[in-house]
Length: 285
Image (cartoon, rainbow, N blue to C red; front, side):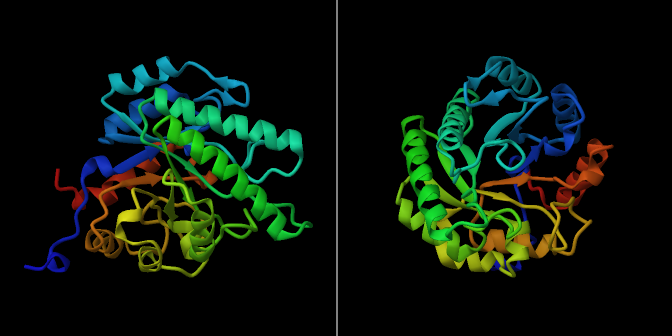
């Protein structure tokens, strides 16, 4: 039977829980919930009250690592907050840029200490009233600096696209291809964010065609309408069809569950339970 005729499948450790929608809850509550629901992998979002990371350094890494390990959870990817925090990849003001680069470098260091394989990033954005190409140059320069630093720490940077209201730089697969080609580092690779992809009117096939099957090791793989970073079943996407596409392209990387909609903040555990139940029929181990 051809691969495309088989039931779509995933390995359980491919689905990585994230803590963004647990912002009103403790790190221990998040970790306990992930263990209870059967998650094995995490993409750790770095923001208070869970992780202390800023332009001066990172803190309590050993405590975080032990808490995750004690629950049988593997931190696969680190995700430094970079939209609501005052750090971003294409910062224009010199002091802002200096502090932003320092912040992301400390994120790379923290990823290494926690045993993560990757750090998820984006292009940042330029001021809406400046020339886009000037902002693009800053983003390319800063990403080049960070990719070199990531290589020194054996961490891969995975760059997602953003929605147009979040960035005026990398918002499409074509933008992502241009930025990654211009940086030209073996430590910078593409990451599909299915919400940004959907808003851009793109498909998984568009991204695989642009970069090739071997380019992808991580995605933000969530439901949407196409806006929203939603629990599976709350949007319009076809989970089974998308998993089949992943199988056809031999994707065995991490599927980060970047659930950001505020409607999940009151009871993130219930949201994650529904999300995991959507994946359960596809697990083969």
